[in-house]
Picture 1 (tube, helix red, strand yellow):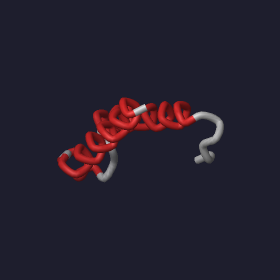
Picture 2: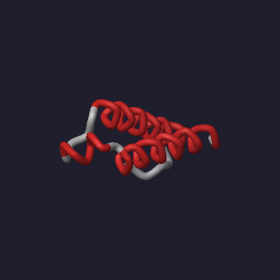
Picture 3: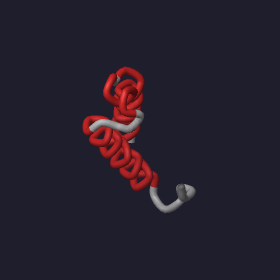
Picture 4: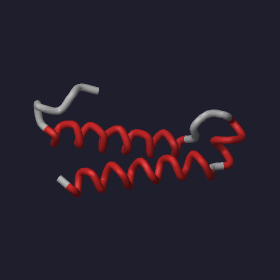
Length: 60
């Protein structure tokens, strides 16, 4: 279970760091291709975490 949480934390950190530091994302006021890819990874990690929690987990 900790590996699922680690993956989620890592994906979230990487995405947020990119959004803070990417010049293209700030210049265009829209996410660049890398930001979109990192967001997909983050969303997949969130889904994996919810699945690993089982049916007793509250819905998001």
